Amino acid sequence: MTFDDKLNKIRLIAGKMMSCSAHDCDHVDRVYNLCLMLAKGQKVDLQVLEIAALLHDIGREAEHNDKTGKIDHAKVGAQMAEKILKDLGVDDEKIECVKECILSHRFRGKILPKSLEAKILFDADKLDTLGAIGIARSYVWVGKNNAKIYTDRDLNSYVNENIEGGVFGRIKDKTKHSPQIEFDLKFGKIKEKLFTKKAKKIATQRTKFYSDFLKRLEKEIKGKL
Figure 1 (tube, rainbow, N blue to C red):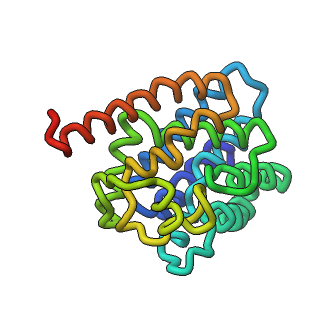
Figure 2: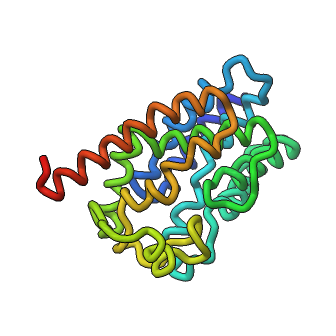
């Protein structure tokens, strides 16, 4: 079986494991394409990067369905990926590299990316939360979780009340959350966390677009426009 054959099988397997339209096959395809763009001119193992991009969110459904908040989709996804890749006869060394990418792709995760492949996957995944597509995905999440379009309240008190483990912790009650709060807690800080120059440049534009949208939204909600 050629690598392309294996990659096609991986794509099909991953497509059956997505959790919602905010983390669906389209999200995976966007992250995959961003990975390839960020990798241009870099010395990376493209096979590792392509596989990791396709499999990075396969643990999402398990995390979403866990009411305890203890399941980490990155850890679950790495374990699932190992089995999938072993069954396809992928080299053990590549499997370990793919697992490292998946384990370290979370913004709120405690494991930081070390390899260039892992850093590129991290950056690509985060870019997809910003800009026009980031806004669209945010409101898909709002609909799925019956969350708020907008929440006007003190951020510190909100964190103390509804975020377990501090600013980057787990959301306790998703119905109280909103894209504006998520921007203040996470999206607005993403650029600072990125690793590649290309991603930082793109993030600058996408962050401004998202921020401008939220400013406009607030004015409309308060009847100022």
